[in-house]
Length: 468
Image (cartoon, rainbow, N blue to C red; front, side, top):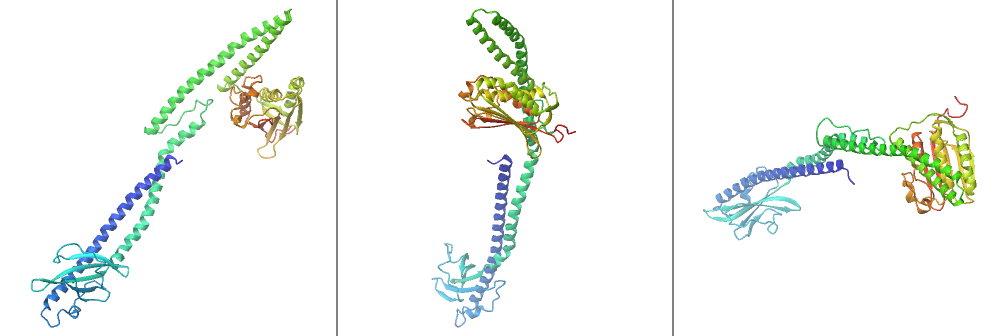
């Protein structure tokens, strides 16, 4: 697909090329006609001299004779050939090689009119003039004179060379000029495009730089800025609503949970106790969802700040594995931990712990009984150095078609995964926390082969324990 700039350059070059070619053709045709007219004038002068000489010698013995014409000067007509015809087109005399009657197309008319034509002798173009010869005030013969046109071709050769050079050079210059003009014209728009590419839901405070000249590009940029203002206002209102609703829901949910827990402890009937226990579990799930929504609202509003401090990643990973070991044991899932070396980074411990706990919890949740979940910590060997935390399960896996949507909010995936309890917000929050630390989460998975989540976090050269 061609860009607009490419289309402008091609169209401009094509139109200019067509105009330049048309101008060259018209100029060459005019020059050619002018050269032919000069040759015709010389032929006409020579034919008139021959006719005059024949008329003067018409009463001489042996008339008509070719020798009487030898003394006539050709007047700039080299290699000229002459022949004399009767009105019945019978040849009286002719120079050698002058046999063109079948090749020459004369205009219809009386023989009293001079006629001109172009033909070829031995693949060379010649110009022929037919001139009536009057004797005793009566046309009795026709004289035909043929002259080569190489002088015409030679005179036009510089013009042909000039056009053959000028047209390609003109096309290149016009293409370059069109490209330069399009670049200058689109430069403000390209700046706007680069700014627009950086605008997202978290950077809606940015605006497009408008050119000083109030042209169409300025109007487009102003319209886009006004649209961004409206979107920014709508998203801020939505974020504020989610944050306010989540905040307001936390207190009643906490009160309800306390009341239900008290009722659960004092209940006498087992069926009632079971019902209350189920309600408490659902309240826990709802409270977790509300907390996640509040966290996302703060992330979107850039209200969540990282509490940066030195962190021992190896110790943190051990704590996270120990925290979920009870859940894994109850489900019959084996937990394996491998730490290549101790490493220290700077980051927010609580938020990174929530990332690893979420990934470990998901790995256990989607693994069946007697399966294994592994967590490893290694350091990449290349530059820049990275800490690689790999959490792998042997669950149902994630189809390739769903990889791009795994980290979107409220996405629950295929039916086998959606049947598992969860809100669909954990991975979205985990990804944002990792990105705030300058890292990324990479997913490798295939349906029926389990999933591997790799958390990459930057490690500076002085991040090893004991190095200062």
